[in-house]
Amino acid sequence: MSLWKKTAVVAVSALTALTASACGVATGSSGSSDAPKQTSVLELLASDLKGSLQKTIDATDKSDSVTLTMTGTAAGQKISMQGVLDLGDPVKAEMTMADPSDGPTTVRLIGTAFYVEVPAKDRSSMGGKRWLKMDMGSIGQQAGMDFSKQFEDIDPTKQVKTLLASEGVTVVGEETVNGARTVHYTVTTPVATQLAQVDAKLRDAVEKQFTAAGVKEVKVDLWVDEQYRPRRAATVMGAMGDVVVDYTDYGKAVTIETPPPAETTDFAEMLQGLKGTDN
Image (spheres, rainbow, N blue to C red):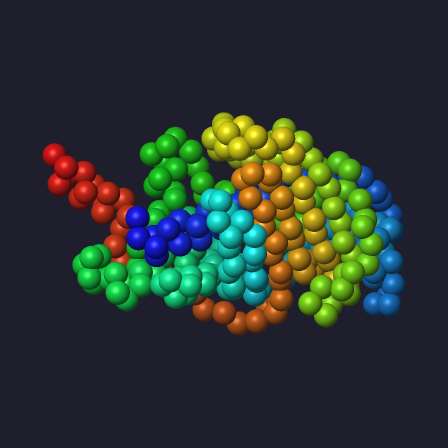
């Protein structure tokens, strides 16, 4: 496998890990739902977990887009990616991942379809096409699973909903993240709690992944600012990997377009062609 293809696999794995991290974890405190003054938001975030996280969902739902930076490990390799999310329907993402050998690799997510930009030097082997398409919806259908709901979970709103699905969330304290004052929440849950949040059609496959990797618990951390917006989300899934995502520039205009069909090679069709040559 060429280096750019390995990078593509890691990039897709990283985005997939991010979607999995949003599938499980929430709280038990209650408190006043009255809107506090700006100067007391951090205090309210620390004292009223349930109410504050709900306000965070409401505030983030109003955002059309967000810029993110992702670091961590996936597929056994370190990852470092930057990009933007279009929080419309369907959710869209464009991420750029550094590769010291082949230069930056760009990955676009449009609904359930991944588009990986092919390095210029490798395009001749791909019929001159610039993009390689992997339709996770079709792959899931062939495997008897539905990936569509899982890939909706990469936006920061779903990260907050993750916290609202688990017991035992605690407040670590006030911290500054990228210049923004925030309150840090954390929770560690057993795999069973995570699996309960996964779509039923995906649950068996996800459970097998956790079991194969020896993962018994998942740790999730979230940092929320004074505007009730997630500023950082971190997930540790044992040997499966760990991901830290920083969110900035909420509402900044972004344009993420589906690559033209004339510049795209379909991964499934490419595999069928390879199978044909083997017969």
